[in-house]
Amino acid sequence: MNVLVCVKQVPDTTEIKIDLESQTLIREGAASILNPYDGYALEAAAKIKDKNPDTTITVISMGPPQAEAVLRECLAIAADKAYLITDRLFGGSDTYATSYILSQAIKHIQKMQKIHFHAIFCGKQAIDGDTAQVGPELAEHMKYPQVTCCLEVEERKNELIVVQERDESKKVIGITYPCVVTFTKPDADPRFPTFKRKMAASKAIIPYISSKDIVGIDLSNVGIKGSPTKVRKSFVHTNKKKNIMIKAENIEGAVQELYCIVNKINKS
Image 1 (cartoon, rainbow, N blue to C red):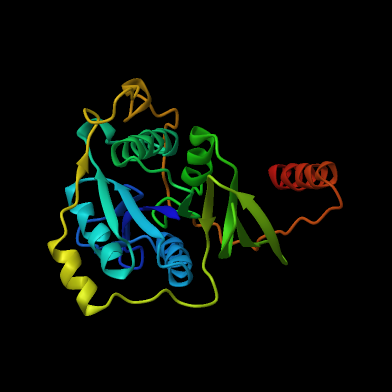
Image 2: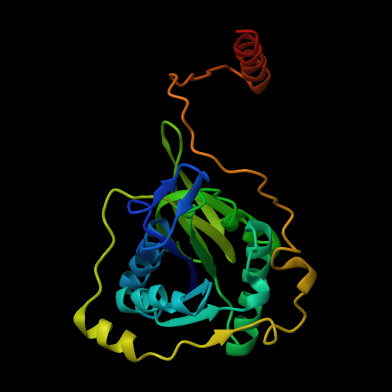
């Protein structure tokens, strides 16, 4: 089985401070780490490999050259191969553009390596953006079925059996190959890298993939120009009012209740 895991290098949000004047994040000096949710996705792939040693785990990341660090970390933990997707033209990409670039890069790797990925694993979201959009959008670009917010995964013949986290329950779902699965935090912590794998990872050659390598990529869909999302303003949330939970038997009832609450707030 061939599993692809998408990972991202993110700033450690526990060390990031807010510039109260500009209302923006102060990233300088903050350490960069492997996005925790992507670590859970890697651990899920590693558990499949534990039961089936013939499984190959490939990791990819899109970012600047320094993102190599998280790829080497993944190699030290469980991955067999790693690729860095990097190009100045990709800078400023929103989730739509990022997922498009990833989809094109994945197709390029499959063609180049003459393989086919049975499953693509992603973290449910990145802690520096919390959009939870890249995984589902990637599935749409690839035209693959998808399941989000999963806790566990088990390989079966021609399908995966996943345990999906719901609001107040868990759901067991079967999904056929090829597919995209996103992962949230499970009950157990991910494994640590071994010294032997760390040594091998430090010497590993990580190929770079740029826009020039990906045949057929539409450059109008990448970078700032290819990003439909426009951030007009960012600010620090200072509203300390108590949150309101809306519960209703159907969507129409929930919408009506929400409308009444908002209308009441606006009049106060």
